[in-house]
Image (cartoon, rainbow, N blue to C red):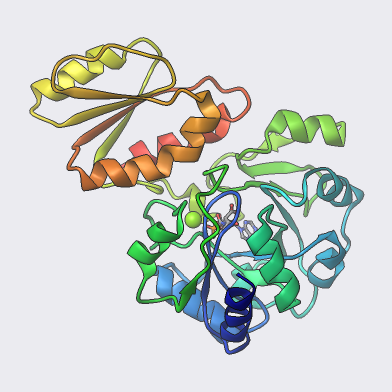
Length: 317
Ligand code: TXA
Ligand code: MG
């Protein structure tokens, strides 16, 4: 692995892109100080250029390099949750590229909790811009093979750090104004943030002034139709899908009997397992020709909020 890290650093220093494992999803990494590298990321993803990207750093010490007027709340959250699946939106330091911030006055920062990512960041010695390593609007990758499938021609090297243990993109919290706001739910839950900050974190409604691609309605979507089904309704919905002539899969965390012609996929590890494997299941079911994926709707607590968010987007057409 040491030689892979060296090779990756060489590519990054030359403005190239590298597939980077993190605990959430794989990122498409490029030098966050190199405008051309950042433009390459957008081109590779087919992502609109006005969208901002997250800068990944090796530790909270780097906060002042990228952000200014860093509030106490940011240091508290960094101390509690970094390295980890939390992205902080802060006022940008002068010199941070417009290509990174989408021209906004804020920058998003995160320290990923993955040994390979941390080794890469330390060896590189600066920030790495890294959105999820998928084509724009497609399902995020949670293995190195997913990255190669989607962006194999675009990326010179994919560091293989194994399957992502969390499986959903990081929580994004905006600390750039008075009131902390949750922009994207993830594995660090509002309850965890509130407990740590000693104040409520509001959930910002969609379509606010800050642009977040994850807030585009149809996102994270597989080719198959996705329907989120209230608890206890999986079997009925499956019958309807089968009656429409569709190949139906039902994802659930509880054993359930489905009608003939529908396949039940029981994720015995509960919500963490559903989160970890959701995107991989979407890909697998697509490749097996399923036309309809039913997912039992989780409760809102804990990881449920992030899962409901991604499921709602996958279901949007
Ligand atoms: O878990 C993750 O965060 C993954 C891994 C690779 O770290 N990355 C990821 O990147 O999900 P991406 O580009 O798919 O999503 C980045 C999100 C976008 O929704 C983007 O708009 C938001 O971060 N973002 C970046 N800079 C921002 C800013 N200045 N203000 C508000 N949102 C920002
Ligand atoms: Mg993404």
